[in-house]
Image 1 (cartoon, rainbow, N blue to C red):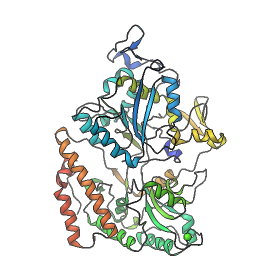
Image 2: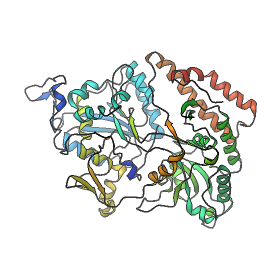
Image 3: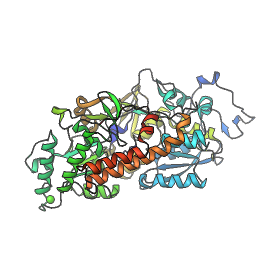
Image 4: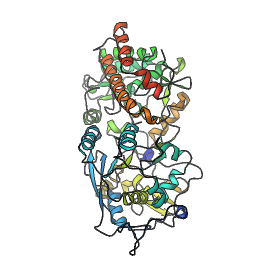
Length: 545
Ligand SMILES: [Ca+2]
């Protein structure tokens, strides 16, 4: 699941792991502590100055002497300033200089491909642009990304402890037996993207929360026909939109009984199936196309970028949008009390409406940061990340720096209300300015933690509302076998692109979803691109009809 999480979702962003028996190193950030793993790890060569390879201190801080080492990180991030509080802290702790190469998510993938093709790529590549396919092609096959497991074992007690959590090492290990990425392990939301509806608009048009697709359609019509936002202009309402980078409109096929992900994979009767040519998906497309024809859907759904989406949302023009959180498009500041948006319930639950469960509440992200063969001294980079995973540094990246926003209290920590800080400091320690949030970070469980003013947790409310109507199973992550890598990389991209492109054409009416010839031609197209091989490689043996 590729997500772009944004700044205001502080509570869910905490990402606290809840695994029993998960322990980390001590609370003292100034010292990486005694490496209990060291006895069984290969001994690294330490010279007379106490350094490994003449440059790196094997343990403790700093990691190197001032001015002796720097590395670059490519990452997608929409930071306005490019300044990150914790990166400055880590410079002070480690003496390691970091050069950030930041690109917005929209352009990062293209830029990364250019960089990789030219050979002029960063020492570390991180963020949501990496994928399993890239790990396999650039790591396993080409050696552009380097294996890290030996470095972890020798120098990284915190990362090693994370890898030893139940199931983590096996998920992180590529089919050739190597680990190519820095782990990003965290508590996660059960549902990433879902529709949020403006309850003030509902009230303004005198309607209650819809529970079926018929009622939902009636609400969207009222949003369009009336002055739902109450600004005196009855024509500036856009009833329905979605996050341009994470549209997830096919998820709504779940309301018709086929909970589907963005490449057409679905869970049906607790089993992983292909749902991209199912009658339920077609029924959804037909319904959604009729909404589109009635002018109930954002006409820029398939063309706008996120700033346009946010701009319209900020102007109170959206009644409903699919998003990770409503603040992303509403621009409304999160407070202790519920805002005007509510999670739209799962619709049609009286007749099989169901929503796809994305996670079981815990995720192992294995494509968030690789080290490339351009990096000199990758051992220093590994130790730098390991230091970032120290408890207080993890708190700093996730919630705010200890001693500024979070304070040690007894045997735990207390986070104060950011609003009590001076305005310029508030900005500096706001979530998006703490750390490039697409990069791995780590917060263990098992320590006491209190928020002075906990913000209203919209995601938690959504999860509780959705839980009875979620699929029991999730679509599992998988590795392609070594001999299928090339074939899979080609087919997967073609099929995903085709699925997405045809979906847009059916929604906008460029192709008539109700016409059997058009539908059959779509199905033929998928088959011609190798749908059967694609599913076979993924171990999926059922195509839902
Ligand atoms: Ca209006």
